[in-house]
Length: 221
Image 1 (cartoon, rainbow, N blue to C red):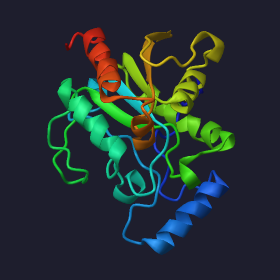
Image 2: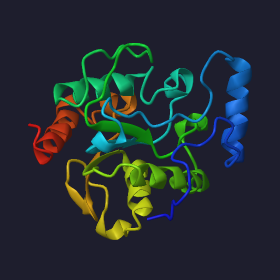
Image 3: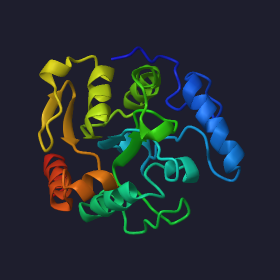
Image 4: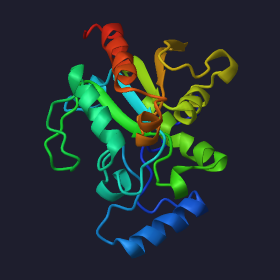
């Protein structure tokens, strides 16, 4: 795993590390000055970091989702499906209304992204994923009781495996699998994007089954 001693788990609002993302962020600040338009912090549960047993790792904020609202998976379809599924398995309450002030509460769960700033066309490049990995590493280091990690899509999965210092050849992405990864178990799933559900790559029952398996693994079924 990355050495994270003294490193923050969240980038600053004006993080300068990725020039392309900085420029895109500035473009959206000019277009929509009332939006968040900044790196999106990890969302933690009411118990705090020590209570986190499950971490959900996504790809990056969506332009009109988390980039607008400032909360992971809030403001777009992916969040509707994610939070509905988390609630169904006891990882969140039923207050999600796609607004940061909706009263949503997580239980034993944190949600983050492998890239914290919105990328053009929702597609970060390799250098941006690699640069932002320091924040994912520090996030993992700050969750002492973490046991399970749901990785939403191959990029989030591969970045998580690399963050843990493991070989992709031994810990590859397989939807619906349990992948042992050092002190954690990874639960890869296709990303809960509208594109994936519209094309049938991911169905709601498929997504639900992943979180049912996580709940069983954590003894919460």
